[in-house]
Image 1 (cartoon, rainbow, N blue to C red):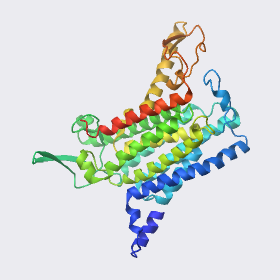
Image 2: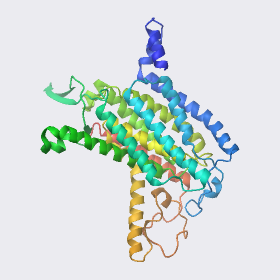
Image 3: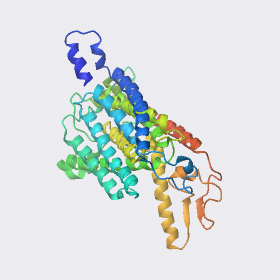
Image 4: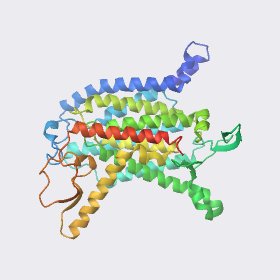
Length: 421
């Protein structure tokens, strides 16, 4: 809203009004404001939840050896993150931008889905809503995102085209006209573009439509996978919020270079006009996550809950899809990825053992972060663990910090792929 106000004031020659046209200026403002809102609103929200006795049940001491210390800690802290993100975005963002509208819609939809799950856990004493409802909500969001990017005339790109060499330097230009495209970036590969429709050359004229249909299904899968990966990572104080802040900062860099025609040409990547508003949104989100860590860092005064974790995964997934960097997600979301894989390995290995009358486990516990806090002798003696490491129990703060470090390393590698091909 303020963007449009100052743009209007600029027509009268008011000094300083032009500052609001700069992405860097608005991005920094949203970062600072979201951090302040998160810190202030977080304190009020925690007191409100405690006053109404809305807290998560005490955690199982076997799964979480530090659970006794967290008795009576409020949950649904994702409300703090969502509110602290949306207010600055609505104030400083260009609200007519299709990508910004998609991000706001993603945040609200998955926030409500997670809120429903958290509220059910607290009020009805159940495990939350049925997993099928979560998956259906995520799939519906992915379907809508995919269809909007397919059909909206505003969701276009300028594909990068390599021209002749000039003075020994390979010059890269972009198509003069914006086009609808299913092109995505393949990391570590020179001329690193893959068009989904190229997989359907045998369909002739129908290959473009087939490529878009595949794109929609890929979008659904990515939204579901990353959202659930973030949800699994949310098991320790500060874990998911810290990882998400790092990932979103890296995505902000990728969104900025994708929205800058000169940087996009220099880096030989697609130019995505309008994606600069993603930088404003992501900086607001990073500020909200950092402010939330003020209360969520060990020992946590509030838990994120599914209200936050589902929205976090969705925001990361949709951003990567919009800027055509979805194939970088295994690097950016490496921790989320291995958490999901650890659960799949654990579940299937346990089923394999059950069929043979054995109690087999791939890790000591899953998701992966839980295996680092299992105390010696805590597992039943008849359990056979394939990967029995580490031998001792790490402090929760150490596990969280080391996972953050891994995320920093993988995000740095993802950014480096812009030049390493």
